[in-house]
Image 1 (cartoon, rainbow, N blue to C red):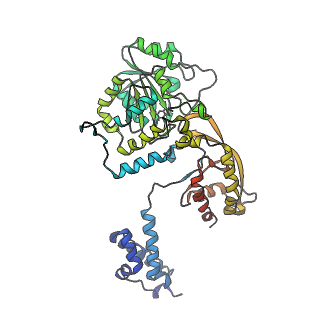
Image 2 (spheres, protein in one colour):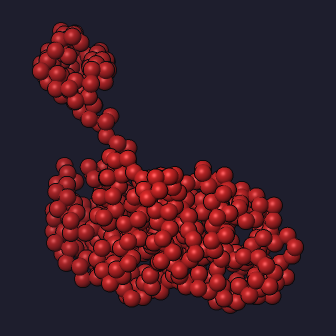
Length: 469
Ligand SMILES: *Cc1c(COP(=O)(O)O)cnc(C)c1O
């Protein structure tokens, strides 16, 4: 080893002429490769001042290797695939629904081909992008018409702005929901230009409260799904079928924000029943809004279904143009809706439903396989056990219902010298090539295996070795 003073750095030209760097240029282009050479040389100069560079470290081979690492790290997308072992199937922060193969194929085609997005192939005239899924939505919900926007928040905003600008909307105080990510009914109402007319109390609202809230400025009676909370105890709310006659008496429409909005009775798959869009339409709602990427299991979008005249009015609102969806969304949505035509095969084909209905026994078997591998990778500092746990549907569907699941529970071994062993481990799991996201509670790091399907198990095992490093 020589001291920093005697080490000489190669010139940029010599570095770029080296075979290893020519390969980098072929991959990343000359501009980026040159910039990385300069950056690595600058780092080496700083290190040399500290006498921390040896002859070998300053060789072209070492420099090229550094450049390769830098370029690779820089070109990696910030948006990365992760393992969702949180136990929340529709996890908003992890991108909600995973799409079935049919949707994946359709999106790939739409990415690479021109599409008849707004082009009627029969007449050769301009078409309407909503037409691509409207027929299916009518069939699956029993509604007269449908339109699609960017997400359900946009659906609610557009509906309120179209029907109730400068007018009043009657909503029960028990339904003034806040969804994570700053969606709050009172705030959306304000931004839509509508005036919120709150009626009843937090825990009890009667039909008479709605009746007293209606006046000549009323444009809409609205019900909102209590997506992420439950009011229990001394409670009373007004069912939609009681509200509809009151609305008709005053000649105003009724709208329901269903939130998750399922298209099938989940009870047939052994899940808790959730009011379907069809039931809501049949109970007399004039408009229903719901998300595409919650229980429906499709791409992010918001669906508005209901009376043809009201949907037509919504589509004429200039805001619709600002909130419309792109071709990728429609490409993904159509095949997902198609799956609902075969409800008997849905639990197998629709990824979201398949995950929600995975029996705990499947996860238990997986936990037994993974337990020794994870324990081996983590070493003596931690104790891993296979345990029963509870998954959640997530994204505001059935907030109080839990699904029996199974997974791995990791606790700190007694006598561990780490100050925050679970925090450290959580970070190590996040630093894996495909980050593993679990959840910490009761001095335990829980890895719920519900969302680790067999197809991804090998990839999960393959990277465990990096934990022990
Ligand atoms: C989730 C939800 C929304 C927002 O839907 P996004 O698709 O996330 O925009 C609105 N209302 C209710 C009741 C919800 O549950």
